[in-house]
Length: 276
Image (cartoon, rainbow, N blue to C red; front, side, top):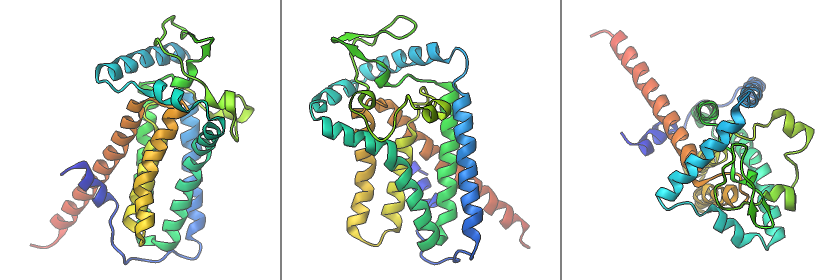
């Protein structure tokens, strides 16, 4: 079975199903908020002693891999759009807000309008997010934006190496609705939690929801375009490499496969318990 079919099974397109209970949303809100708080806490703890040197060393490895397969074009893409300050600012706002707003909005929409699909899709999103934590622990990664330019001279990482090209920290230079230097961001953010890109993984999840459960062609097409626009946003703002997005696609694919495997075992147990 392919990853695509696993995603289909993990997110059934059944149109019937139970309705939401009157106060079930309270429990679901508590589950989602509690899970996200635990996730943020664990992610911030992944920024432990010695992680900085590992993060920059891993960035060097990742750039080498991208150069080997001819996909290291992030800096060229960013440079092509830097002259449009307003556009980069919009992309910063997109990166910092829609990641949460659209995902949470679709969770609420599923719960209210497609309740039969809410639980499997919630589980897929939760498992995807949990698997991403493994990546943050195992492969801390300095994102492109940490390589800033000073008169076109690359600033080396803490272990003395440079990737040979400059990136611009667009949020610091052009601004947005928030800042990495704010007290809140410093308290909860791990700057080296870049691999896998959860922005891209969540965007794929949103695309699946829109494609499978919308009844209009326009919204379904937007479901296809949203992950692509998110990929562009995370690259042009220098928050992720292309391989980070590949990592995001892999974690949601792995989550779908795990859910499907669990369902198969559950069905086998039920079948074995039935009389011959």
